[in-house]
Figure 1 (cartoon, rainbow, N blue to C red):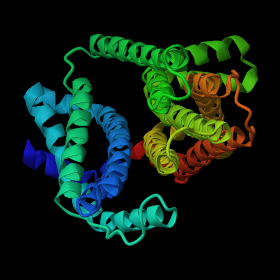
Figure 2 (cartoon, helix red, strand yellow):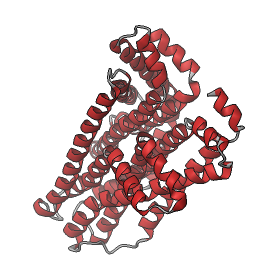
Figure 3 (cartoon, rainbow, N blue to C red):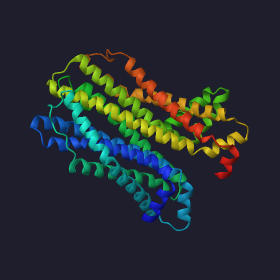
Figure 4 (tube, helix red, strand yellow):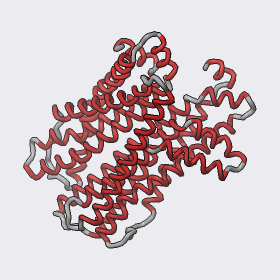
Length: 437
């Protein structure tokens, strides 16, 4: 199965590229911040504490994001290989052998990703230390270091994320009964989503009821509200897409029929594309407004700690933004290109290429609107409680420009990626595409 996994990677280099890129970017981010721990070993106690806090917080969020992103791309890839998995089972492969093959593929990608990420992580780690020094977050003259801590954390976390993602993806591939397996996975996802939403609401309530503006934990607890809520809505993506399709059916007007049908027929792919939009909108909005509220209300923390916290928030926003963008691009491109045959059939029965691309654009518009809506609801789990505690008002006294910028970025990224992928998927003659498939 290991040899089969290596051959599969060579044969599907393009398909595995999305997962490799996700793991590569994740390993780079993880090792960049883990290198702060190597740097901290050669500094004074106060500087080491600041570097350790930043490495721990951002690295912990990075683990969650890498695992979620890897699971999304690998699960989509396995779903698109359903015929291959069925063939392997028909010729005698056991579920355990298929799981080992998928695990070997994921581990191979993780090792390659860490090896490729090591060199750029050295330079990004140095750049991060220089930026912290320029911003007076740490004393000038601190010598950046990249050593065993960064490498071990990067390799360990990336391998763990890839292995977990492979095990999650293999559940579908080794299911003996597709309908029953799908129903079971659907229930598990719903339960996990509800639990995450409950956790997000709990953080919001705790922030308002149990904490005040002088508590050190108020920012940490408040920030978890939007993260857990966004993950919860992401896990509930399939029921959300189904509900949206039902709503559009009731409101349907003429040309929206095909869009609604595709939402129902590609629920898994649509839900996978919805997740990064929700995460991007929620965490970017929640974190940016939380920091804006903090700046307006002032802080009782020492100036050095306050500066470090502010830097952490903005770094996390940048990290989430980049990763969510990669998740969205990878998922959208893979899902759209996988529909080449469907697009070819539509063109053979009379649809023009602009009509097919327009259909995909309509789907992307629906996804962007739904993702922004639930991302905003998730962000409210952080913004409203934090504003109540810090400013005494339900809504923060902050400009709406930040929110509009986040919404615009989410919409543009979704539409641009979807339309570009659709044009690429329809660039060949329909007869050639259908016959080749």
